[in-house]
Each structure stands twice: as C-alpha cells, then as structure tokens.
Length: 261
Image 1 (cartoon, rainbow, N blue to C red):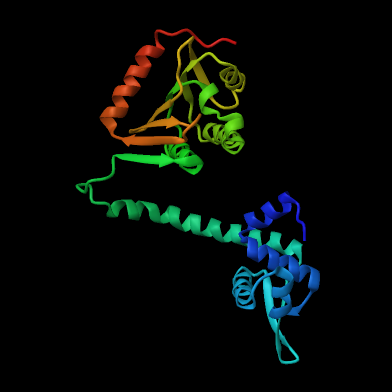
Image 2 (spheres, rainbow, N blue to C red):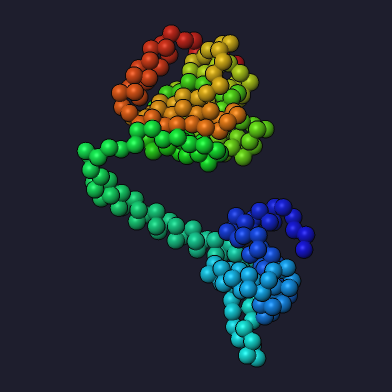
C-alpha cells in the first residue's frame, strides 16, 4: 500500500518501525487474521511477522485471540493510537514528577571530591540541541552571547534545527532567561531583533565582523557552537573560565552601540 509520507512519519513518531507499520496497515485492511495471512500481506516472513506482532502487542496496538483453534490477530482503530499516546504522556509526567522529587537526594550522593567531566563534546543535530537545552538548566539567569544569527540559524541547511531553534528561544524566554547578545549586523539578526521583546533579547551591535561560531556564557559554563556547517560544539564547565569570559563580555558590551535595524 502506498502511504503518504506524513502518515508514515506520524506512525513512526508514535514509535512504530517500518515493519510494524506494514503489519498494522495490513491488519487495518484485512481485519482479524492469522499471522500467516498478515505476513503475506505485509511482505514479511512468518517468523518475522510473529515478532512484529508481539512488539505491537506490547505497545497496545495489536490484540491476540483464538478463533477455531487458530491464533488470530487484530489491531486497534486509528483513533485509539491517540488515546495510547495520551496515556503514555501521563505516565511520563508521573515519572518526571518522581524524578524531580528525587533529584536533591541523587545530587547529595555525588562525592564533591570526585573528578567530574569539565569538557563535553557534541556532534550532529541532536548534539547541538542538547547544548542549547543545557542553557535552560539555569532559569532566571542572564545568558551572555557572542555571535551572528545569520550563521547559527541554519535555515535551508537544516530546516528541522532552524525551526527547533525558534521554539527554543520561546522556551528560554519563558524560563526567564535574558539573552544579552554581542551580535554582528545581518538579515537574520535583524529578524531576531524584531522578536526581541517576546524572546527577551537585548543586543549590542558589531559590523563587518565574521562570527561563524556562537559562544554562550551561562552559570558556571561556556558553550561553543558551530551549527552552520559541521554541527559540532562543546560545553566547558568551569567557573573561573565562565566568570572571565562573562566579565570580558560585560566590558566589551559597555563600549558598543545598541543594535539598530
């Protein structure tokens, strides 16, 4: 069966593999059937089909019963997938609440004399996202930045990351984190400047300076991010380093003009 990419992506987002999607679609079309018929419809070997049906059963998508002595499988209606997803979200909220309650105890177990990692390296889109996520762990504290939005909003190079970045900016502002940016004049920086009030940004302006890498200083950490081409970055966790760069940022800030369109 030919499936629209958006529907395939939605089922993948629910947590189904390609084989599981094929089996689910086969059951939707066939109705309740033995594994052998489902396997034939889904173009899978019978043994593989049984494994896939077992996984879908764990997800609550497939049910098994016996009809005339034959193991038979059926699947839930598409609307039930949403109910299953909502139940999963409720479970995750419960786990999150429990973890939040446990964090002070877990943090107290850490040996203050133990050597902790000071530099963490990241690669790829998910790595870049994790660096930005780390800044949200310091709510209601200013984030001191140097960069050029024209470089670290990747746009056509990665529409996924580009869209995620704008949503991150909204989340940062919601967390009460001001963005104090020493930024180069560019078209995308103009766009960020236009959104400054809703996303808690204050800019000081540079002109004709190449800034292909973003530097963020927050808490006791410094993040260096290169997302315009190679998608790499690092976090340095060291208070003297963060304090030195923050003080330097503030000194340069005092000498620069306000950003203007």
